[in-house]
Length: 269
Image (cartoon, rainbow, N blue to C red; front, side, top):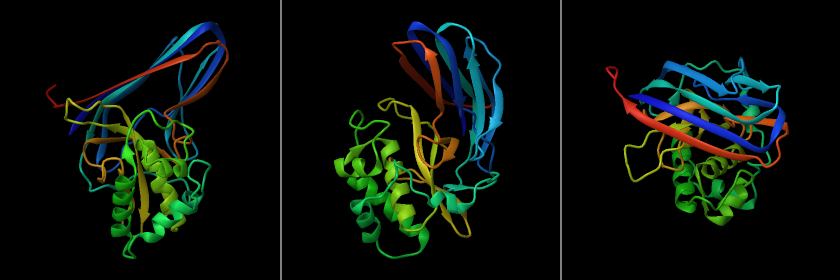
């Protein structure tokens, strides 16, 4: 499947900012099942973007604005060709030892309820166990927007029984790591061929399975990632994998607007 993405982020300030710095994780990697046909990242005010890699191997761009400005607009866009690999992620250059993905973070720290969730699953081979975990989270946590935020932890989301894809991913990661399974948070895009559902930036998880490698689990939708998923970046949790993180000096009264468009296309288009 060929998927066209436009991800537009606008920061606006009531008073001009004197300086801004942003780290961008807005460029998809190439691996088995995902090929980047074309991709670019632009910004306004126009400024050179320094490309690099973060500690988890994700493609990054560093943006700085060293003059007074009333806002920043960042646009990532391009075409990605995807294939269904049953969730298996192969062909990526791995730079982090597996043990790192067993480390709990403030957003993925398990509590008694998460530990009980993991322990209640039937003992089985790793892949069936991970599918059972995904199904249990989807059953316990309804997809409801506006009830959680960027600071919501896995424990808080499970207790509330409501959340969004970020919360489903954090709960999955917390339970998997508690059970000794390396797991990581993934950001990307999801193409939904359904006009009744809004398309937006998406999140899911990947867990390590001996003999297969990293395997994706989209607990919010109850599926392993398919050709409808475009993978951007992966790290310990949503903070480490955030598409944009940064700071500014001055610029009181900041507002943020994000628009994401995801469409299917054909080679002729």
